[in-house]
Image (cartoon, rainbow, N blue to C red):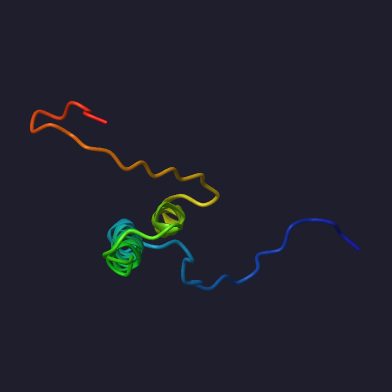
Length: 85
């Protein structure tokens, strides 16, 4: 038996690669979905301060970049952005 390469008929197999525009659209859709989810989380926070409000606010931001650590601070700012307290 001869170990030479034989000509094997080939067929066009659809590429599994996603076209650049389609890939960007999928990525944009994912980013928008994340932004919507995080906005909904923030909007669902209690309007009145509770003892666990900062924990809830930090948890609302965590989906931004899992695994992540979020910290929430409450303070008072002057109109120019300087922290008063």
